[in-house]
Image 1 (cartoon, rainbow, N blue to C red):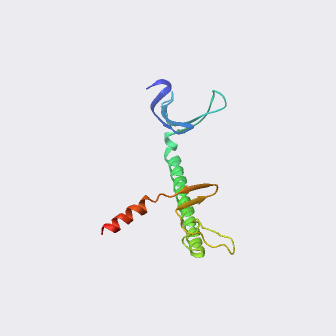
Image 2: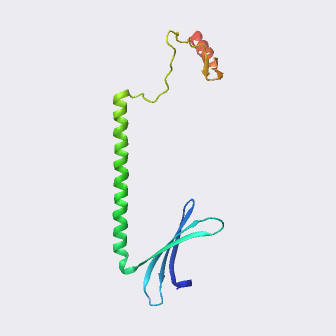
Image 3: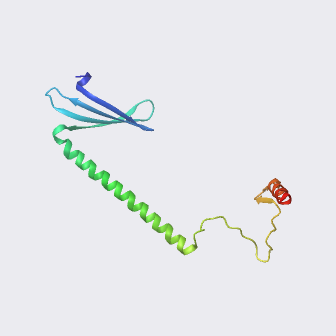
Length: 142
């Protein structure tokens, strides 16, 4: 038996929390699972919370945990299904390209001719014409 009655311990470390799963034995010989959550608090101290589950209660607690995990998974799948249905309805109403970038022009304004210049707000980006020149060379060779 280890320090403070510890028989086994494992740690799960996340971004801002750590969980410790300690299997311990008390002076009367009762084996229990101690779950400790530790997270950094204000300043240099840590917030620490723990629960103890005795061996005779373990199956009932794990059954409750399993039921909770099944509910969470079912809820997650239902929400994903609802999101997919909403997206499909939106695509059906507005077309599959909804949300893509649209080009607007003022009434009476003629559409701009493609001149190789990409205009985005105040900045003008010149599109390379090397591709066009290389295509022309390959066409002239044929």
